[in-house]
Amino acid sequence: MYARHVAVSKVLERVRGVCCTVTLEVPPAKAEQIADVLKALADPTRLQMILALREAKEPACICDFTATFSLSQPTVSHHMAKLREAGLVEATRRGIWTYYRLKPHLPERIQRIVEALG
Image (cartoon, rainbow, N blue to C red):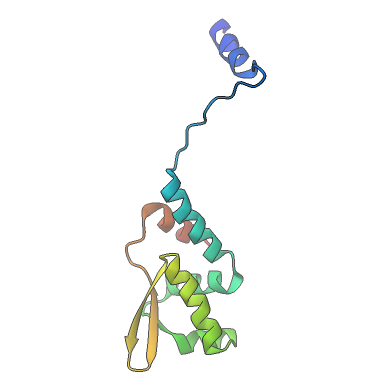
């Protein structure tokens, strides 16, 4: 009991102007990657696109998203570009159409984020 009290006291006692470092669980480069993913997912349309791709059995055509969201093709392409930049989706061209799918081998932390969505 006494040892526990002493440990707590040490944590609570601070010397003015003296700071301690904090141990970071995620290295800065990984934190940047996770932040980019979260920024991309912060848009409701992109979030719904990721959820749709997560559940899709086949890659989705860009035209499927224009019809679903009643958005223009350039707007849907802009959203998909943001998701590609964040490393969440990959694209395949077939003729004039581009098909998107969720990247199959996302880093584990990113995969957990996608799985935790809606």
